[in-house]
Every structure is written in C-alpha cells, then in structure tokens.
Length: 169
Image (cartoon, rainbow, N blue to C red; front, side, top):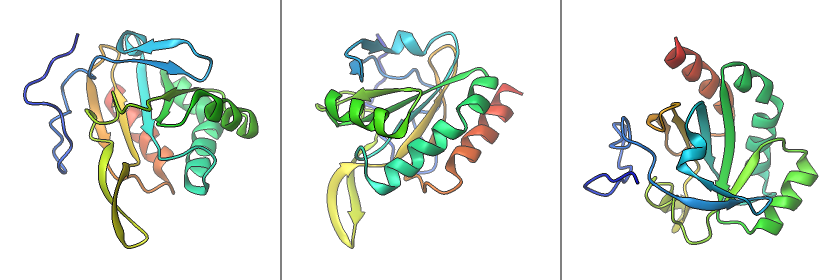
C-alpha cells in the first residue's frame, strides 16, 4: 500500500505528488471490474479526472483521447478516465462516444481527493466544490511522473503525448 506523509494534495506548480507512488485504491470500472494501483504497473498510464459524463468539455476531452489512443498506445501507455459518475452513466458515455478505454467510478472520492482532483473551483463565476479537471502520468512502477492541474481541454492530449514521449526518452 502506498503511504505518503503528509497526505497528498496538489497546491500549485510543484506538485508533492511528483515522484511518489499513486495512492492505493480499489475502484470499479465501467464493466464492474475492480481496478487497483497494481493495474497501473508494468506500463505507462494516463489517468485523467473529469467532472461529468456526457457534458460538452468532458465529451471533447474523452473523444480526443479516443481519437489519439493509437498514438498513446504506440508510446507504451494505457488510458483511464475517472469521475464520480455511476457505472451505468459510464457505460452510456462509452457506448454513445465509442470510447475504447476504461472509466473508473469514484463516487466516494477515494482516489480523486488524495490526487487533489477534487476541491474548490470557480464555475460560472461562483466558487464551488467539485472535480478539478486534472491528468496524471504514471510510470510503469506506479510512480507519478507528471501532473496537469486545472486542464484546459483544447490541445491537452497533444501535451500529454509530447510529455510522455519526452519522459520515455
């Protein structure tokens, strides 16, 4: 089990997550299968946290990962999405958008909170709590190598590909 003291939180540009193992977790994917941190070992993993299935920005981001999945895989990586949505919602989203990767359901924020992907954010000029669109690049040993906090969807997947290629160097 990964243990890091103090608890992992993402406060700014130099994430304390960098260089640490992804926190231990056990979550269901869209098919009801359990996924743990061990499933991220042995190959690079792109884990992207997004607010809600079938919303415009989240659909754009998911489809960009879908459309570039072959490029991600050619660099030896796999893709997982994670949100608070139910398994049924994930299945509908995957079916509607033909998504070829797994979506994790984290309704209790078991992984999203420790990753710093849940907290206060501004939405339509109001402060609220919710999922902060973030992406984590995890190496084959399960160690977080890059963090994108507060992701802007446009061009994001290309940035992930560029960083993955550079880190694999």
